[in-house]
Amino acid sequence: MEVPILKRKPSILLLLIAVLSFAPVAFAQSASTQLANLPDADLLIYISPQRLFNDFLPKVLPPKEAAEMQAAFADIKRGAGFDLASVEYIVVAARFHKPTADLNFVAPDVMAVMGGDFSSESLLTLAQLALQDKVQVEKQGSRTIAVMKIDELAKEAEKNPLLKPFVEVGAVALTPNSLAIGNMRYINSAIAAADGTGRIKPETLQSLMRDPNVLMAATGAPIVAFARSFGLHGTEAASREGRCDSNFGNFYASAVITGANYSMRGAMNADNPDTAKIITNLLSSLMKYDTSAIPDKTVQAILQALKLTAKDNEVMIEAEFPLQMITDFIREQSKPKAEAPQTSAPKKSTTKRTTRRRRN
Image (cartoon, one colour):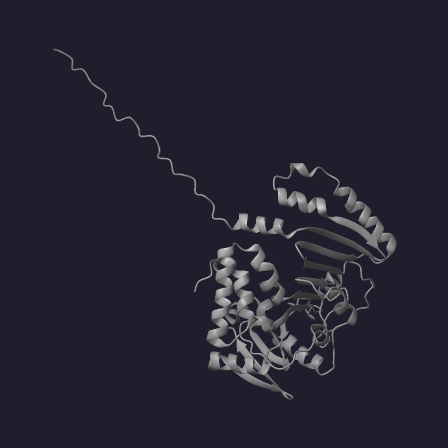
Protein backbone atom coordinates (compact mmCIF):
# COMPACT_ATOMS: atom_id res chain seq x y z
CA MET A 1 0.00 0.00 0.00
CA GLU A 2 1.41 3.40 -0.97
CA VAL A 3 1.13 6.30 1.42
CA PRO A 4 1.22 9.62 -0.48
CA ILE A 5 2.42 11.67 2.49
CA LEU A 6 5.48 9.39 2.81
CA LYS A 7 6.31 9.96 -0.84
CA ARG A 8 6.04 13.75 -0.51
CA LYS A 9 7.76 13.97 2.87
CA PRO A 10 10.99 11.91 2.78
CA SER A 11 11.82 12.85 6.37
CA ILE A 12 8.77 10.94 7.60
CA LEU A 13 9.82 7.93 5.51
CA LEU A 14 13.35 8.02 6.91
CA LEU A 15 11.99 8.18 10.44
CA LEU A 16 9.72 5.24 9.70
CA ILE A 17 12.58 3.14 8.31
CA ALA A 18 14.71 3.90 11.35
CA VAL A 19 12.17 2.48 13.79
CA LEU A 20 10.49 -0.33 11.86
CA SER A 21 12.30 -3.40 13.17
CA PHE A 22 11.31 -3.74 16.82
CA ALA A 23 9.84 -6.72 18.72
CA PRO A 24 8.38 -6.40 22.23
CA VAL A 25 9.97 -7.69 25.45
CA ALA A 26 8.67 -7.84 28.97
CA PHE A 27 10.03 -4.57 30.32
CA ALA A 28 11.46 -1.18 29.34
CA GLN A 29 13.50 1.29 31.36
CA SER A 30 12.56 4.95 31.46
CA ALA A 31 14.06 7.19 28.79
CA SER A 32 15.89 9.35 31.30
CA THR A 33 17.57 6.34 32.93
CA GLN A 34 18.79 4.96 29.61
CA LEU A 35 19.92 8.32 28.24
CA ALA A 36 22.07 8.87 31.33
CA ASN A 37 24.28 6.04 30.03
CA LEU A 38 25.03 7.75 26.70
CA PRO A 39 28.44 9.27 25.85
CA ASP A 40 29.04 13.01 26.05
CA ALA A 41 27.38 15.13 23.36
CA ASP A 42 27.32 18.74 22.16
CA LEU A 43 23.90 18.45 20.51
CA LEU A 44 20.92 16.25 21.38
CA ILE A 45 17.59 15.94 19.58
CA TYR A 46 14.82 13.96 21.30
CA ILE A 47 11.76 12.61 19.46
CA SER A 48 8.78 10.75 20.89
CA PRO A 49 7.50 8.49 18.06
CA GLN A 50 4.43 7.52 20.10
CA ARG A 51 3.31 11.15 20.44
CA LEU A 52 4.32 11.86 16.84
CA PHE A 53 2.29 9.02 15.33
CA ASN A 54 -0.62 8.98 17.82
CA ASP A 55 -1.12 12.62 18.88
CA PHE A 56 0.32 14.84 16.15
CA LEU A 57 0.28 13.37 12.64
CA PRO A 58 -3.32 12.03 12.77
CA LYS A 59 -4.51 15.53 13.72
CA VAL A 60 -2.60 17.53 11.12
CA LEU A 61 -2.64 15.21 8.10
CA PRO A 62 -5.64 15.15 5.75
CA PRO A 63 -8.02 12.38 6.95
CA LYS A 64 -7.42 10.18 3.90
CA GLU A 65 -3.63 10.26 4.24
CA ALA A 66 -3.80 9.75 8.01
CA ALA A 67 -5.95 6.64 7.49
CA GLU A 68 -3.55 5.34 4.82
CA MET A 69 -0.60 5.85 7.15
CA GLN A 70 -2.29 3.98 10.00
CA ALA A 71 -3.24 1.18 7.61
CA ALA A 72 0.38 0.91 6.44
CA PHE A 73 1.56 0.66 10.05
CA ALA A 74 -1.02 -2.06 10.72
CA ASP A 75 0.19 -4.00 7.64
CA ILE A 76 3.77 -3.80 8.94
CA LYS A 77 2.70 -5.15 12.32
CA ARG A 78 0.71 -8.04 10.78
CA GLY A 79 3.29 -8.90 8.13
CA ALA A 80 6.54 -8.60 10.06
CA GLY A 81 5.55 -8.38 13.71
CA PHE A 82 6.98 -4.87 14.13
CA ASP A 83 4.94 -2.54 16.32
CA LEU A 84 5.83 1.13 16.02
CA ALA A 85 3.99 1.75 19.27
CA SER A 86 6.79 -0.07 21.09
CA VAL A 87 9.32 2.70 20.37
CA GLU A 88 9.40 5.16 23.28
CA TYR A 89 12.13 7.53 22.12
CA ILE A 90 14.66 8.34 19.43
CA VAL A 91 17.65 10.52 20.29
CA VAL A 92 20.10 11.92 17.75
CA ALA A 93 23.44 12.98 19.25
CA ALA A 94 26.41 14.87 17.80
CA ARG A 95 29.87 15.37 19.32
CA PHE A 96 32.55 17.75 18.01
CA HIS A 97 36.32 17.29 18.18
CA LYS A 98 39.50 19.32 18.26
CA PRO A 99 41.22 19.88 14.90
CA THR A 100 44.06 17.63 13.78
CA ALA A 101 47.73 18.40 14.41
CA ASP A 102 48.03 19.72 10.84
CA LEU A 103 45.13 22.13 11.58
CA ASN A 104 42.33 20.44 9.66
CA PHE A 105 38.70 20.42 10.79
CA VAL A 106 37.48 17.06 12.14
CA ALA A 107 33.94 15.99 11.27
CA PRO A 108 31.64 15.52 14.28
CA ASP A 109 30.52 12.12 15.46
CA VAL A 110 26.82 11.38 14.87
CA MET A 111 24.69 8.67 16.45
CA ALA A 112 21.02 7.75 16.78
CA VAL A 113 19.77 5.84 19.83
CA MET A 114 16.36 4.17 19.94
CA GLY A 115 14.73 2.67 23.01
CA GLY A 116 11.45 1.19 24.13
CA ASP A 117 9.57 -2.04 24.67
CA PHE A 118 11.51 -4.16 22.15
CA SER A 119 14.46 -6.56 21.98
CA SER A 120 17.58 -4.83 20.69
CA GLU A 121 19.44 -8.14 20.28
CA SER A 122 16.60 -9.51 18.13
CA LEU A 123 16.70 -6.39 15.98
CA LEU A 124 20.46 -6.69 15.51
CA THR A 125 20.14 -10.35 14.49
CA LEU A 126 17.37 -9.44 12.05
CA ALA A 127 19.55 -6.74 10.46
CA GLN A 128 22.43 -9.21 10.00
CA LEU A 129 20.13 -11.73 8.33
CA ALA A 130 18.64 -9.09 6.03
CA LEU A 131 21.97 -7.55 4.95
CA GLN A 132 23.96 -10.83 5.01
CA ASP A 133 27.52 -10.36 3.70
CA LYS A 134 27.19 -6.55 3.69
CA VAL A 135 27.54 -6.62 7.48
CA GLN A 136 30.67 -7.64 9.37
CA VAL A 137 30.52 -8.60 13.05
CA GLU A 138 33.00 -7.31 15.60
CA LYS A 139 33.25 -8.14 19.28
CA GLN A 140 33.98 -5.58 21.97
CA GLY A 141 33.89 -7.26 25.33
CA SER A 142 30.53 -8.94 25.71
CA ARG A 143 28.89 -6.82 23.01
CA THR A 144 28.48 -7.53 19.31
CA ILE A 145 28.85 -4.65 16.83
CA ALA A 146 27.33 -5.00 13.36
CA VAL A 147 29.55 -2.96 11.02
CA MET A 148 28.55 -1.96 7.49
CA LYS A 149 30.80 -0.18 5.01
CA ILE A 150 29.07 2.36 2.76
CA ASP A 151 30.87 1.90 -0.56
CA GLU A 152 29.48 5.03 -2.22
CA LEU A 153 30.67 7.15 0.70
CA ALA A 154 34.08 5.45 0.64
CA LYS A 155 34.59 6.60 -2.94
CA GLU A 156 33.65 10.16 -2.02
CA ALA A 157 35.93 10.04 1.03
CA GLU A 158 38.91 9.45 -1.24
CA LYS A 159 38.33 12.95 -2.61
CA ASN A 160 37.02 14.49 0.61
CA PRO A 161 38.74 13.24 3.80
CA LEU A 162 36.06 14.94 5.91
CA LEU A 163 33.76 12.00 5.10
CA LYS A 164 36.14 9.26 6.31
CA PRO A 165 34.55 8.90 9.80
CA PHE A 166 31.23 7.97 8.17
CA VAL A 167 32.48 5.32 5.74
CA GLU A 168 31.79 2.61 8.33
CA VAL A 169 28.56 2.62 10.33
CA GLY A 170 28.08 0.44 13.38
CA ALA A 171 25.05 -0.77 15.32
CA VAL A 172 25.13 -2.19 18.84
CA ALA A 173 22.65 -3.19 21.54
CA LEU A 174 23.54 -0.94 24.48
CA THR A 175 20.92 -2.51 26.75
CA PRO A 176 18.34 -5.27 26.21
CA ASN A 177 15.91 -2.62 24.91
CA SER A 178 18.05 0.17 23.42
CA LEU A 179 20.01 0.26 20.18
CA ALA A 180 22.65 2.70 18.91
CA ILE A 181 23.54 3.36 15.25
CA GLY A 182 26.37 5.71 14.26
CA ASN A 183 29.94 6.14 13.08
CA MET A 184 32.38 3.72 14.68
CA ARG A 185 34.19 6.19 16.94
CA TYR A 186 30.92 7.25 18.56
CA ILE A 187 29.70 3.65 18.81
CA ASN A 188 32.86 2.69 20.68
CA SER A 189 32.32 5.66 23.01
CA ALA A 190 28.71 4.58 23.54
CA ILE A 191 29.86 1.12 24.63
CA ALA A 192 32.39 2.65 27.02
CA ALA A 193 29.72 4.99 28.42
CA ALA A 194 27.29 2.09 28.91
CA ASP A 195 30.04 0.46 30.98
CA GLY A 196 30.52 3.65 33.02
CA THR A 197 33.24 5.67 31.22
CA GLY A 198 32.79 9.10 29.58
CA ARG A 199 29.08 9.47 30.18
CA ILE A 200 27.00 12.47 29.21
CA LYS A 201 27.01 15.46 31.57
CA PRO A 202 23.99 15.43 33.93
CA GLU A 203 23.23 19.11 33.17
CA THR A 204 23.01 18.35 29.43
CA LEU A 205 20.50 15.59 30.05
CA GLN A 206 18.54 17.75 32.51
CA SER A 207 18.24 20.44 29.86
CA LEU A 208 16.98 17.95 27.25
CA MET A 209 14.47 16.28 29.59
CA ARG A 210 13.25 19.36 31.48
CA ASP A 211 9.78 18.54 30.12
CA PRO A 212 9.33 14.75 29.66
CA ASN A 213 5.98 15.16 27.86
CA VAL A 214 7.32 16.86 24.72
CA LEU A 215 6.68 15.80 21.16
CA MET A 216 10.30 16.65 20.39
CA ALA A 217 13.07 18.66 22.01
CA ALA A 218 16.65 19.74 21.37
CA THR A 219 19.51 21.05 23.48
CA GLY A 220 23.06 21.98 22.66
CA ALA A 221 26.17 24.02 23.34
CA PRO A 222 27.02 25.62 19.97
CA ILE A 223 29.65 28.05 21.23
CA VAL A 224 31.49 25.34 23.18
CA ALA A 225 31.40 23.09 20.11
CA PHE A 226 32.71 25.91 17.91
CA ALA A 227 35.55 26.67 20.32
CA ARG A 228 36.62 23.03 20.41
CA SER A 229 36.31 22.45 16.65
CA PHE A 230 38.24 25.54 15.59
CA GLY A 231 41.22 25.28 17.88
CA LEU A 232 40.36 27.59 20.77
CA HIS A 233 41.19 24.67 23.05
CA GLY A 234 44.15 23.51 20.99
CA THR A 235 44.48 20.54 18.66
CA GLU A 236 44.46 16.77 19.04
CA ALA A 237 48.23 16.90 19.48
CA ALA A 238 48.57 19.98 21.70
CA SER A 239 45.94 21.24 24.13
CA ARG A 240 45.44 24.92 24.81
CA GLU A 241 43.82 26.36 27.91
CA GLY A 242 40.51 27.91 26.97
CA ARG A 243 39.96 31.56 27.78
CA CYS A 244 36.19 31.35 27.85
CA ASP A 245 34.51 29.33 30.58
CA SER A 246 30.86 30.19 30.07
CA ASN A 247 27.59 28.48 29.22
CA PHE A 248 26.54 31.40 27.03
CA GLY A 249 24.65 30.18 23.96
CA ASN A 250 23.61 26.81 25.37
CA PHE A 251 20.03 26.32 24.27
CA TYR A 252 16.88 24.27 24.66
CA ALA A 253 13.89 24.05 22.32
CA SER A 254 10.77 21.88 22.39
CA ALA A 255 7.36 21.29 20.87
CA VAL A 256 4.48 20.17 23.10
CA ILE A 257 0.86 19.23 22.43
CA THR A 258 -1.47 20.01 25.34
CA GLY A 259 -5.08 19.19 24.61
CA ALA A 260 -6.13 21.25 21.59
CA ASN A 261 -3.12 23.57 21.79
CA TYR A 262 0.38 23.44 20.32
CA SER A 263 3.20 25.02 22.32
CA MET A 264 6.76 25.99 21.40
CA ARG A 265 9.17 26.58 24.25
CA GLY A 266 12.81 27.53 24.29
CA ALA A 267 15.61 28.89 26.44
CA MET A 268 19.09 30.28 25.83
CA ASN A 269 21.75 30.61 28.49
CA ALA A 270 22.96 34.21 28.70
CA ASP A 271 25.68 33.58 31.32
CA ASN A 272 24.23 35.95 33.94
CA PRO A 273 20.89 37.64 34.86
CA ASP A 274 21.96 41.09 33.61
CA THR A 275 22.88 39.81 30.14
CA ALA A 276 19.66 37.80 30.02
CA LYS A 277 17.60 40.96 30.64
CA ILE A 278 19.59 42.98 28.09
CA ILE A 279 19.05 40.36 25.37
CA THR A 280 15.37 40.02 26.28
CA ASN A 281 14.82 43.78 26.10
CA LEU A 282 16.65 44.02 22.76
CA LEU A 283 14.72 41.16 21.16
CA SER A 284 11.42 42.47 22.55
CA SER A 285 12.01 45.88 21.00
CA LEU A 286 12.95 44.33 17.65
CA MET A 287 9.73 42.31 17.66
CA LYS A 288 7.54 45.38 18.12
CA TYR A 289 6.72 45.92 14.49
CA ASP A 290 3.56 45.81 12.47
CA THR A 291 2.92 42.19 11.54
CA SER A 292 0.08 43.15 9.20
CA ALA A 293 2.67 43.54 6.44
CA ILE A 294 3.28 39.76 6.56
CA PRO A 295 0.98 38.11 4.00
CA ASP A 296 0.68 34.72 5.75
CA LYS A 297 -1.93 34.89 8.52
CA THR A 298 -0.49 31.83 10.31
CA VAL A 299 2.95 33.42 10.55
CA GLN A 300 1.30 36.60 11.83
CA ALA A 301 -0.46 34.67 14.59
CA ILE A 302 2.74 32.85 15.62
CA LEU A 303 4.73 36.08 15.87
CA GLN A 304 1.97 37.74 17.90
CA ALA A 305 1.88 34.74 20.27
CA LEU A 306 5.63 34.83 21.04
CA LYS A 307 6.49 35.80 24.61
CA LEU A 308 10.02 36.68 25.74
CA THR A 309 11.05 36.74 29.39
CA ALA A 310 14.29 36.71 31.38
CA LYS A 311 14.55 34.10 34.11
CA ASP A 312 17.77 33.85 36.10
CA ASN A 313 20.57 33.30 33.55
CA GLU A 314 18.24 32.35 30.69
CA VAL A 315 16.26 34.08 27.97
CA MET A 316 12.94 32.23 27.78
CA ILE A 317 10.70 32.16 24.72
CA GLU A 318 7.23 30.64 24.55
CA ALA A 319 4.31 30.56 22.15
CA GLU A 320 1.00 28.73 22.36
CA PHE A 321 -1.75 28.60 19.77
CA PRO A 322 -4.53 26.23 18.63
CA LEU A 323 -3.34 23.01 17.02
CA GLN A 324 -6.02 23.58 14.39
CA MET A 325 -3.98 26.51 13.12
CA ILE A 326 -1.03 24.19 12.40
CA THR A 327 -3.39 21.63 10.88
CA ASP A 328 -4.88 24.17 8.48
CA PHE A 329 -1.42 25.45 7.55
CA ILE A 330 0.01 21.97 6.80
CA ARG A 331 -3.03 20.90 4.81
CA GLU A 332 -2.97 24.11 2.82
CA GLN A 333 0.72 23.61 2.02
CA SER A 334 0.18 19.96 1.06
CA LYS A 335 -2.53 20.77 -1.47
CA PRO A 336 -1.38 20.30 -5.07
CA LYS A 337 -0.84 23.63 -6.73
CA ALA A 338 -3.25 24.39 -9.51
CA GLU A 339 -1.49 24.61 -12.83
CA ALA A 340 -2.05 27.79 -14.77
CA PRO A 341 -3.99 27.14 -17.97
CA GLN A 342 -1.78 27.16 -21.01
CA THR A 343 -2.58 29.92 -23.41
CA SER A 344 -1.71 29.46 -27.04
CA ALA A 345 0.25 32.21 -28.71
CA PRO A 346 -1.71 34.26 -31.20
CA LYS A 347 -1.25 33.05 -34.73
CA LYS A 348 0.61 35.31 -37.05
CA SER A 349 -1.29 36.63 -40.00
CA THR A 350 -0.53 34.67 -43.13
CA THR A 351 -2.11 37.06 -45.63
CA LYS A 352 -0.15 37.23 -48.83
CA ARG A 353 0.93 40.48 -50.25
CA THR A 354 -0.42 41.10 -53.72
CA THR A 355 2.04 42.28 -56.32
CA ARG A 356 1.06 44.18 -59.45
CA ARG A 357 2.68 43.54 -62.76
CA ARG A 358 3.83 46.39 -64.86
CA ARG A 359 2.49 46.66 -68.31
CA ASN A 360 4.92 47.13 -71.07
